Image (cartoon, rainbow, N blue to C red; front, side, top):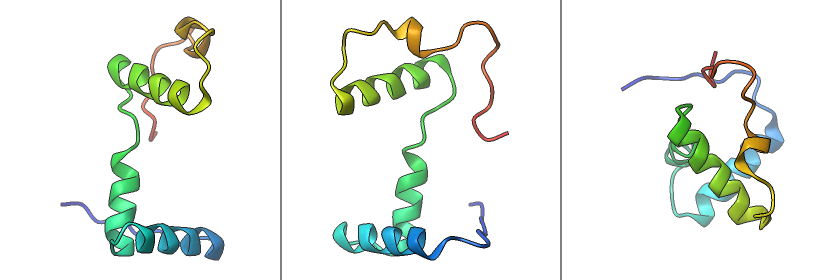
Length: 80
């Protein structure tokens, strides 16, 4: 397992994570793991899943996927 240290976290962000953790019956650490596990995979299938998630929340199905993904540059790692 990896360890991540986050310095200078905004107190309001910490409070929101704590509230979300309490609402979900988890520790703050477990909540952050859950949040990070929701980050889309940068592969094309992961990007499509992210687009589907956005469409589900926004409810916009009239926009073609090709408008939501840039095709003029190669895929990048989301964390670089």
